Image (cartoon, rainbow, N blue to C red; front, side, top):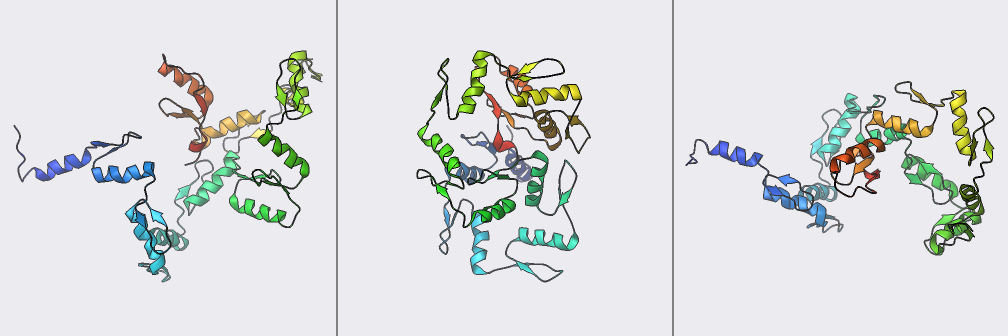
Length: 314
């Protein structure tokens, strides 16, 4: 039998602190202290027990609540010794100091460009991935940065708008509104007489009909192959011409198709949009995910490989 004496008590406490015996039943994360587990659970429950009586804002963590209170009190305890400017939060002081030191701790792993702030790095990464998350509902244009999106929105001010009476979306052209309304009423007036599939416009029906008729109107003059769509013919022609218009600025490799180019870019930036729904492991390519799924043999694997958009940028 081992007895805890005063001499080994500190070691015992240290060992206990390193053990993670409190587990979150929702996500499986482990904690060494029960108070940390309780604080973590608020992320799942959405509980915000710290309430600001000045502006009504609520917080889940006391630390964030205390930091917020300084905005109302005007307290600025963090002082820059170089220019005398005061800050309410230490993180703002540290960010400000970089304007004096020139330090840029956030590095792009693709082109190695450096930035003073993490937010600037995230904006920059979109130039490599081609991501454009800001969508204009009025004219359909997409933008990679919110600043450019907001500037673009001002160009619509004062112009005549066509409003959707169901969801209040606005459009510059009446035909765009009509196309949008079909989403709400599920209006599909163009039907395939062979299989019964419905389409919102005649050009989609015509393209679909070629599957049944076998008509391939787009002909390759070099090898004689025929294609259903013009876009497929254009991609095919690059095989003959050797044209590779998509060049990687990082390693110099060129690609004939944008799909292969985008897949290659993920190897540089570390993006892994394909997630295993069973063990949550992420992969940069769908083929690697399918290969991984063989580990989970014996389970129903249908429909489990799909892009995880939320994990593209963290």
